[in-house]
Length: 440
Image (cartoon, rainbow, N blue to C red; front, side, top):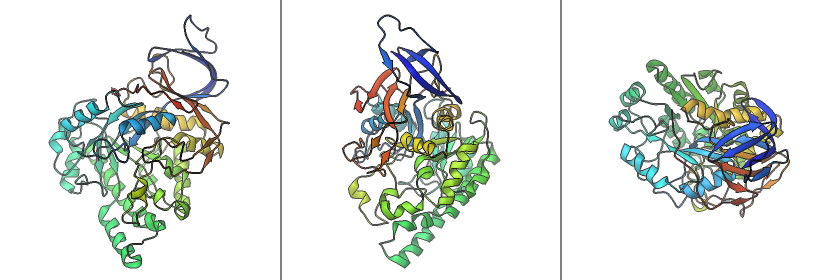
């Protein structure tokens, strides 16, 4: 396929060009390309052509939790949102805490994901031998829950934590919240409100202090052992003191922000309630503004989603019963485009943090850029289009979005995965063309 009349956003540049796809890869990028015989021509009509977003943090709920979502449904929603690659988390059932479970998860995914996929190996207080046996490319990284999580995946043994940071054969990624501090806050909230705690209390129960203490511990262990560390979903201004601007390729310690923490602030608990409940929590206006500024400056390296669907029935519960997590992949790029429209971020910065940086940090082979020879994972965005988020348009298995009823001032017009046009004008092609991601 030859894509003509596009405005490409890539590696800090914005330029008009044509792009020729041959098989799975980009064969040529040039100001003007004559269509070879038999090649289909796709006229971009001056719209924006970006590398597909690489989402390094999703919970697609398979195996074992498929009433909420699965690899097929959620990856279909992802490509409809311009996300062409994802890294899925290990807190499923059975948990991905052995190399055998990891291999089985890749088996389950084969031929079923619309976007390219990779999986994390999870940690517990007693699976260090499995972590040490990991080979390059078996997992995208090792995930440590340093805050409350599913089952026994909370690693709270100090000696175990130290050994994981010391011996990890690959990048360590962390969820940083201090569980004992959160438990004290929960008990205080229950004493004050009973079981009907207002959702507006969530950022004070899962407090900034709990985040800071855990992030300080993770960064300290990484510095002690020289561990390659990536801190997930930062939520507070104060935690930024642990990080510095620089290239994700060369940094020892990197950090990400998620779309909902860049977009929402605590004022939205009033109308969204449980639909905004996530861990770590959406916090103050000042925190949101500090995170956006850190994305601009390069202190925050990566933008992800932490897509985590739950059913409507689950979310209808009271504070302690409603689970934490939001479905986000279908509208993440559109939310970032809205931040661009507001003047808070540049589109070039969005592409760097959401498309290039995960490829750079994790060593993904031939993805994340518009480059000749690289895989043709692409998204075409109409910056003047309209997207209304309605129940009928939401593709998640859970059937709802925190953006329900919102109108975005841009539209995802087309998505290519491995050279195949998989989504166009609201229609998803039924074939799943996602592949297992390779790592250098």
